[in-house]
Amino acid sequence: MKPLLFLLFVALLASATLMVRGCMTGALDPTAVVAKGVRSTEHSIVDNSLGSIPYFGPPAKPSPAVTANGTPSHSEPNERGVARTARDGSLIAVYHSPETNLESVDKQYLVHVEGHLDIAMYSFTDQHLAEVVCRLATSGVRVRIYRDSQQYTQEVQEHAGALQILSSCPNIQMRVKSPDSLMHLKSWTDGRMLRDGSANWSSAGEMQQDNTLLLITDVVPVSQFGRTFDKLWNRTSNTRVR
Image 1: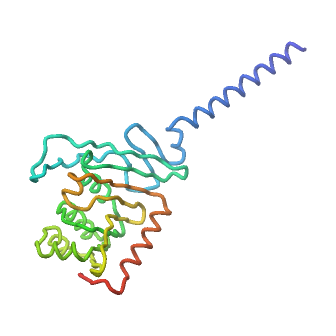
Image 2 (image 1 turned 180 degrees about the vertical axis):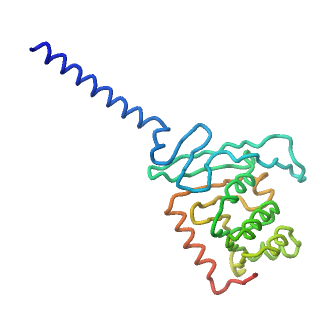
Image 3 (image 1 turned 90 degrees about the vertical axis):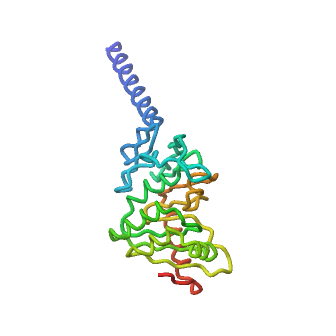
């Protein structure tokens, strides 16, 4: 009887040991978060809660980087950003130019915007991004663009192509801050994701200068920026452009 009890005890101990090791392996395995809707890989992090936004990985088919004189360079931009997931499943991704073509990153996520798009942009001269925003507006997305007074005036005087593109599109409203101080933000949100950082929407800002582009889906900063944008948008001193 005693040998039988001893063998049963050994079997139970071995089973318990395997279960503990399995739990530890699952906790350390980055693919273990798939059950929560997030999958981590070497190149990207997938968040199924984002709906049509595919992933926080390298952008597909990035535009070529340009040199100081505006001609395309022959060097391929570094597509990989740094991404991580928080415990709640929210995501954050960071890209840096000129190592990464930030225009391509912006395009990658703008095309998945639905419903509305709020943009606060100090400089907006990138015609490719203006075309993307125009297509979104034409498809029914409600677009609000908040601008800095000095920068906007300069772009009007120079007959900037981006402004001409935007002026021909429906569903786009634009307001300009009073000239008493700068509106220096470089951000946009669709209520699901916040794009922030130091990169203006210009060819130089997105592809040549030393800049950072931050993408985040955490509900707290996304909602906070949404409330901040509403306050900026509703300033009584603003000038309504369209």
